[in-house]
Image 1 (cartoon, rainbow, N blue to C red):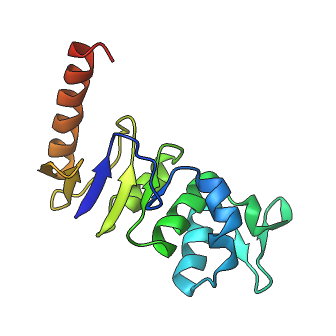
Image 2: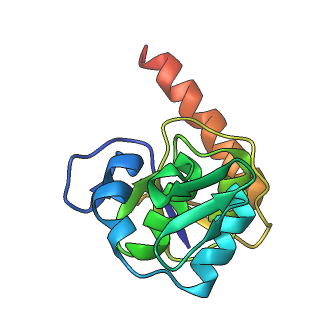
Length: 150
């Protein structure tokens, strides 16, 4: 199940600023082979042992990864936290929505590929299945926002 929240909460269990959180905390952790594969898949960057990255543009530090790459690493390294996915591109969202047991914060719908067996729980209330359920929930949410003049 993927837990998706659309209303922001200020809590120690929430990561709202991915770049800041990654640079301060996640970048100091060890990285697995799976993490390195994701870094390559998303940013086409090779992670060195000294936490520098090699890209077609040259060398950089791990802090030079994209916001989307930092987001997915924050999700992987911080189970149990709700991570802001608003800055993610479709490539990262497609990966996130193929995972299980994660919690995300999104303020708006994004067109993404969601497998038909993926369960998504919106705001700890509504459970939907697959891309049709995802799109239907968002269409109702936008109707509600219009009615509430939000």
